[in-house]
Image (cartoon, rainbow, N blue to C red; front, top):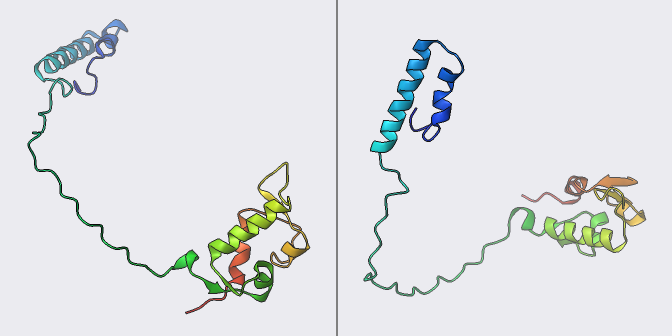
Length: 155
């Protein structure tokens, strides 16, 4: 208790001042006395100083950097074949998911297709309707969902 309420003597003295029974007041005052004694006997962590490290240590030698190995892209970075509709929109037969989303967002922003009042909504023009199943407007979080069926699954 002394560790939790260290420095809060007013809180420890509160029950006696609030009119509690004398037994409760004795308990809380003895607890505050014990807390005060524990606080005085235990040195605080802030008062303890950490020893300085010696400056005579060996200087680190420069290790040559390990050459980076090229890993094949996987997941959303993997270039995969796309549906003919998405291929016509993007102008490529194979593309990664990230690149497809980037190009779609570039098209949306360049043609000012975002709802000015609600930037989360995108108005679909004729070109976007071919990709997004003929919907008039979609939410920006739906883009990834709507694109998932355009990517051909490869095993």
